[in-house]
Length: 293
Image (cartoon, rainbow, N blue to C red; front, side, top):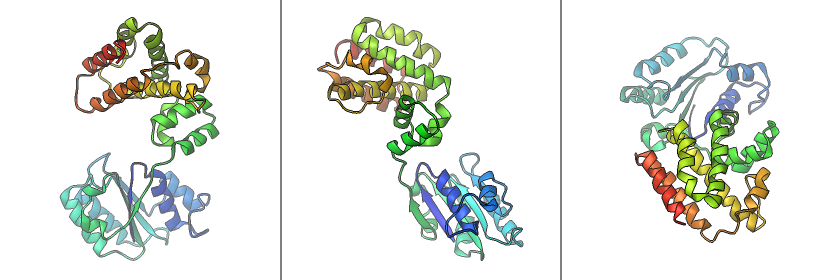
């Protein structure tokens, strides 16, 4: 009667599971019938959803679900409540939920999701079927993006930068993504052809436009890492990410300190999360790169 989905990307699995509980066509959701479509559109009357990321789940929310589901089903089918990011619940809500799970109503199903199972009460875990979801593979995401009409190069880059197809699609047409791609390629060219201008060019482009934006800086650094990794792959005739820039990459493939550069960038990415000053962090990284690491 209750499932706990654990993972960073639970949206599609949650939807499919809810559809499967209602779908009359087969044991699993057909995803095409009227009931499946209504659940996908959020128009199924016997479905209640709360998301702890939008607003902390309160005791009153659990009581509302109980009261609504004590009434007759509007559809005469199963009743489902979904609590996304259930760890973002008040203590009183957790206790009310626990009691609800201990005394389940006939025909009522719970789908809970969390990114961090350690923050969910063990007593709640024990009353659910716990399902750990593996992250979608990079290659699977790339192929799905290609089928959506995304160019080969962008599909390769996006699938490396983001953990789900949904995130990739949300970013592929963004100004930030387009800017960062240009900045990253320019940075690599400056690194090998005009290192003395590395810092000033970075300051008048990325750092000026996206000052203090950690996620944008992180995307930039990760994209530079992908480009530098391609230098190694080009030299050894391996598959690359920036497939439209192979001639550009071949110009810089013979770098004896390539691995040290990549390691420096990865260390900088890691340091972003330590509340370090972004401007000083990038300056330090650039000075080390200018010295040959």
